Length: 181
Image (tube, rainbow, N blue to C red; front, side, top):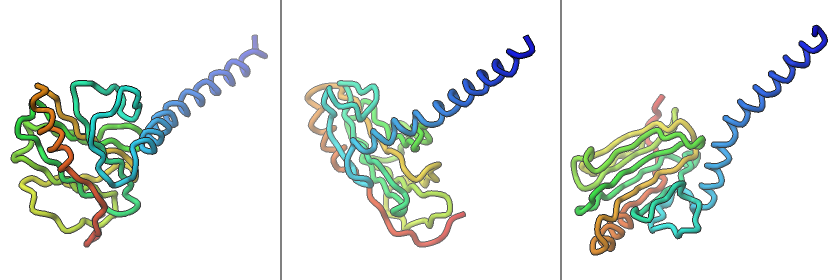
């Protein structure tokens, strides 16, 4: 029995290391693949993914999507999102490089018909702010991630207007002015 104890301990140690490594690596690998599939970074990509697309997890045929894969190593990111007038439901979400959601707002939480979201990393300067009726500044937990806009298609006759509103949304790198610690 005493000779088995070190082997059992080693097996548990190896199992624990594999488990922890998997929990750490798999979300980052999944997000890296998704970001590569979504297109150019710091650019808004609007449109409904086709049924064979795997870039949006658990996508719904009742939703329209716009996405902005971001890379803050190129500078702060400004997202300007238009909330559709006839939206049954609209949301904006931010995900880090480990697929963790670190921000979400829906149409009921936005005061006007648009929102400006400025995303910076710790230590990065804050850019000049625009004239949006509502502005949110986020400090992202990682340099890379994803902004995802979603809206429900409540009626096919509203789909074109909803899609047009998503296409008016934008994201891009902006120059920073001051340091933020």
